[in-house]
Structures are given as C-alpha cells and as structure tokens.
Image (cartoon, rainbow, N blue to C red; front, top):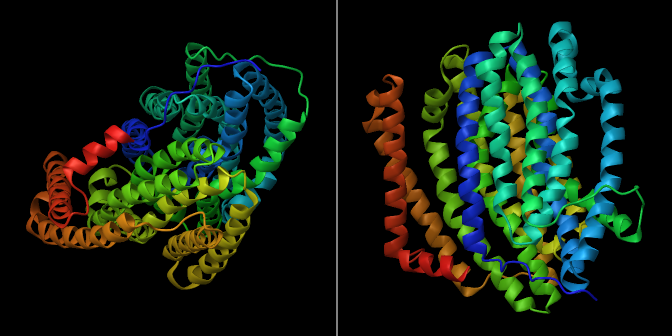
Length: 522
C-alpha cells in the first residue's frame, strides 16, 4: 500500500463560507449578466428560445457541478485516496474520465442530430411558432457541447473537493458569467441575432471552465491522463451509483426543466420563470449547495471512521446553520419580490408587465427556498453511505407530484401553477428524505436544533414585518431612477439583516460569539 498525504481537514462552516463567498461573487456577476440579457432580449420569442436552449447546459451544470456527481464519485475516490494511496486514486479518476468522455461525446453527437425531435419534447408549445422553434433548435445545438465540458469539469472539481480544495470548483461558475458578459458586450453587436451570440458564449464558457479546473488540478499535483476506456469494476460501481445519484441530486433542476416544458405553452412564461429562478438561486447556491458540497466528504470520512455520532452532529449543525440563513432569505425575497425584479430587470425590452408576472413566480419560489436547501442537506447522508437508489425513488415521487400539480394548476392559474408545482414537489422530497433518515436512526434533531429552529422562524417573521413597513416608507425612492432605487433597495435589505441578527442575538438563536466559534471549529 502506498502512502499519501492526508487531505486538508474539512471545516464545514469555514469551507462552506469559502464556497458560499465565491458563489456569491459568481451570482452577483450572474445578476449583472441577467440584467444585461434582460435589456437585450426582454421576454419575447428570442428570449424564450434562448432560455430553453440555456436550460440544457444550465440544468447539467447544476446537476453535475453542484453536488450530484460528487454523490457517487467522492465516496469512492476518497476510499481509494485514504485506503490505497494517491496513485490508486489517480488511476480510478483516469478510468472514470476516459469512460465519461466517450459517453459524453456519443451523447453530444446524438443530441446534435436529434435536436428538432428533442425540442418537440422539451418545448412542445414552440411548434406553433416555426421561427421560435427554429431559433430554439439552433441555439441549443450551439450551446449543447457545454454539457461535455461541464461534466468533465465536475469530475475535476470532485477530485479537488476530496483533497479539501473547494475554491477552484466554486470559482468555475464565475468563468461562465464573465464569458457571457463578454459575449453581450462584444459579440452581440457583431451578430444579427442576440440569441446566437449568447449561445456561442455558453459553448465558449465550457472550454474556459474546463481549462481553469485542469490548471487547478495541475497545481494540486494531480494531473489526469487519458487512458483507453475500460469498464473496470470500480467504474461500473461509479456509474451504478452515479446514474441514480445524478437524477436524485439534480431533482430541483429536473423539476424546473419540467416546468419549462409546460411553460412553453404560454407566451413569455419561460422567460418569467427563468428570471424568477435566477433570484432565488442566489441564496440556494450560497447556502444550500455550498454546505452540501462540503458536508458530503465530511460525512463520508466520519462514517468510514465509524463515527456515527459525529456524522449526525455534523448534519445537525449544517441544518441549523443553513436554516439560520435560508429562512430570513425566503422571507425577504417574498416581501421585496416586486421591487427586486423591477429594479434589476425593468428596462429595455423588459416591461412593467414582465416585472409583475416574474415577481408573482418569485414569491411562490420563495416559499420553496427552505425545501430546496434542505434537500442539499439531507441527500449527503444517503450519498455518504453509497446509497443513491433511495433518494432516486424519492425523486421519482417528487417528479410525479410536480408534473401532476403543474399540469392541473396550469389550467387555472397559468405559469404560476408551474412554480407552485415545483415548490410542492420540493417539500414532498424533503419529507421523504427526513422521514427515512429518522426511521433508520441516521438522523434525529438534537437539543440545539430543536431550540434554535423555532427562534429562527420567529426572528425571520419579525424581520419580514419590518421589511414590509420599511418598503411602504420608501415607496417613492424605490420607484425613482436606478441609482436611487438600487441604493434604497440595498439599504432596505441591510436594515432587514440588522433587524434579523439583532433578534437572533437577543433570543439566543445565534450569537456573534457562537458564529465565531463555529468558524474556528468548523
């Protein structure tokens, strides 16, 4: 057996803060990108066509890069790294890379050929508008190779996460946003169709992200070489775990994609749901995805060491920390939805009617934000035990709930019913995941969580009330020119944060001293 240097120790709060902070930078750039896209595209037919095309790579980016691939790869890779050494772990990664590359190349070629038929499935409503349908096919064909590069990037990121290096993978989405911003600034003026320029920007971003992670691996001393593809027993196990893990880990994205399919039947709905999705994805990425990515290798390590109590404690603290940030974020988004959408997006081709429609969807999504985050907290408890089939079964139930609710509600309340279906599906998934863990004895709320969670909810409700009255007092500045409106919105948000943490401090839900200790201890 060869020895290998131990990976960096994982401190959940500190590492999640690293990922969350980097993700925050990425999402702020993403907001800038979306503001520029809204001005260039609005919510018309080109926008609808592009956002359907963008849903493909964006869905796979979220599924692969934000934890689902880790669900299968990290436990197996970590086992070889710690048990058999660095050389054995590298060999496993290279075998996985070779097989994954061949599979992705075949998938990409098949998708490029079959794209018109695929589009009939993913955007059936576009068939009534031949020009919109043709644009959607064209844009998706250009952007689809992003899937290949982001999937390989996810494998590289999973290796770095297992080594305790979380920053490079968290920083990769920054490359996507920067590349698309450059496409808006420099490529759109050179083309007749802004959707075509943005699609090429997506494809280029995949190459840039792959190169960034390859350099990061090289700096970590873990260069991967291509081998002849071979389905070794380890690779077979990876894909047996990985396929259900990808579906289960990407359930939120799967449900959003189902929503896009149904939304294609209503003009403008694809764009409204996309812009609303972009807002709530900020706290989801900064909090839920960041903690989930860090929690998986930590749980895997504890469980291999036989430390079941430590694993349960880590999950309790992760849940406590996540809800401390998520619940007030959901309350704030719900109260300020119309102002957020109007100030960020209402200009150029994006009208006041688009603001109203998008904000309604955002309010509904805010009700599901805690559920979206809880899914990211509970699933690693299964994945760390190399159990991806149970979350897959729960994901299947969630998908059925989403489809049924979305189709029924769409008949009565249009696109808002799609958002409601997505939220109902998320809470259904949370209930299943938590109940099964509790029955297995793998998770139970401890005294600290039971004490803090109600106090967190009470503080968030009080903060929401403060924001409501603050919004009424600042109605005129919020409707003023962009600099004044944006400053007023940011001031309102800052005031809400101060009110919330003041209430947490006096009730004991969270104290500054406790947060500092958590960051030191991880």
